[in-house]
Length: 124
Image (cartoon, rainbow, N blue to C red; front, top):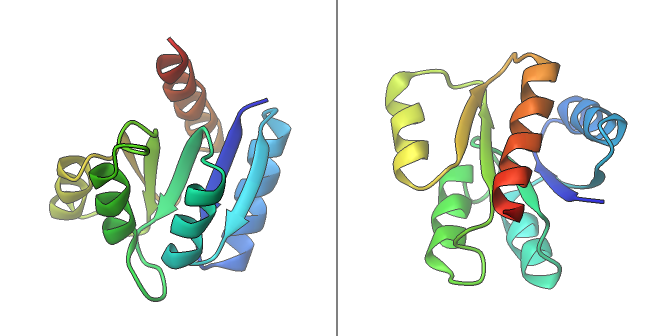
């Protein structure tokens, strides 16, 4: 069973993403900030990360940059999830190495489909 780490500081979004990913058949771990995400990934890397940009402490962009700079996590599939839909932020996320960038609100089915595609690509 693939492990998905959900990083978001909004409890209701964490809960809904956790439920959505569990319904899709994934094991789900949730954390509420960037530092917790980095330490959790260092302890036991997930198969994919759903990463919010606006986090307390270090931002999702910073988390993404650190993960891409580390050879152990440089290929980890990461989908940025954010309420920030501006093109400049999307470009920044993709330039920093995000595998995808999804703005909230989003289609739950589209998100599940993207997660499955990225996990299939990572496995091959």
